[in-house]
Length: 101
Image (cartoon, rainbow, N blue to C red):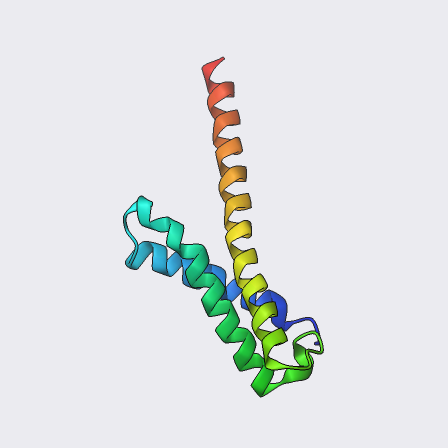
């Protein structure tokens, strides 16, 4: 259970980022603000988890460390999103090449 809070923060930040992208930031040029938002949300979630149950957040000893872990976890959701986008792009490209032959 000690390491369970990190993936939870990452998944929550990913989902919140997708909701923000769909509902609030509809223009693609505004997407550059999503990493800032999910990093901030991750920091807030890290701090909240620290005060609720500090031992579940990698044994953090102070709130600043909890915020740092939360921010990194939130920003990891942005990286996860990029990996998914690149995989889908490569699959579509491969299918397009196979259908074009």
